[in-house]
Image (spheres, rainbow, N blue to C red):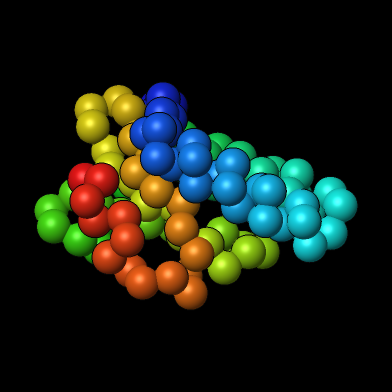
Length: 99
């Protein structure tokens, strides 16, 4: 079964801001970050249940391989809703208002 992956507006903003930040550090690095997020979306689309529940009864996350970021998501039926894409260096409660 394949799941549909949707992003909340805040998650889109997280990705865009992070891409800009990485791009300011080195040309092409923002695109590399985006490719990493796309890779995570493919993993979630195929099998979102393999990651354990981390918060409340339904919030899970997966850490990107190359960058210090987590993708926070919930499973709603056949949909995956990405709530946030946040740095592991930021305060962990930053995304909790998005659930």
